[in-house]
Image 1 (cartoon, rainbow, N blue to C red):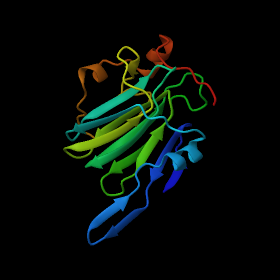
Image 2 (cartoon, one colour):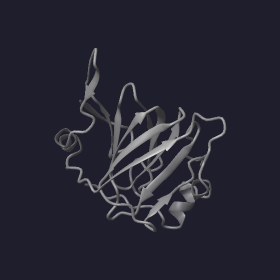
Image 3 (tube, one colour):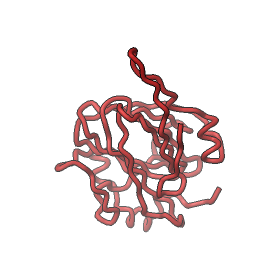
Image 4 (cartoon, rainbow, N blue to C red):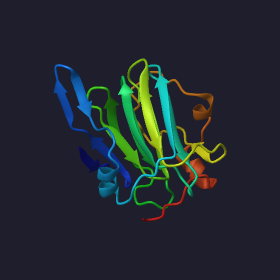
Length: 189
């Protein structure tokens, strides 16, 4: 397993070693000790989520209030997605920056994002199924989003006509979320 930092501080790409033979493939898609060594602290697990999306669905950009925040470890178990991590932490040196990784059922990569970072993805295939390990449980009212199509972010979603939920379509721009105090504040670890 290789773990490399992404362009957004607090985000990492995890590249598992895959062992293939005539029976199929085996891999370790999550190792608490390897992740803790890379990010500097363990990921406490409180909830696991799964979503399945049709092609061209864009989910996000979602984030949780900090504290407590919600760190996530995410992989695509079936199909493929264009996965995006956005720094929505006011005061961060990488505020407004984003990075992307293609997650799929071939390379079987994963991403880790620290508390306070925003996350979204675009399904590249029908039935793209994502698995999330989360450090805290879902807390309605403490979960927020910014507009994934915000021109200021400039994310090149690979969908001619992105399909959004009503909630994501009406989310504020990053600038508006900052202006209204919706965003988490950056605190160096």
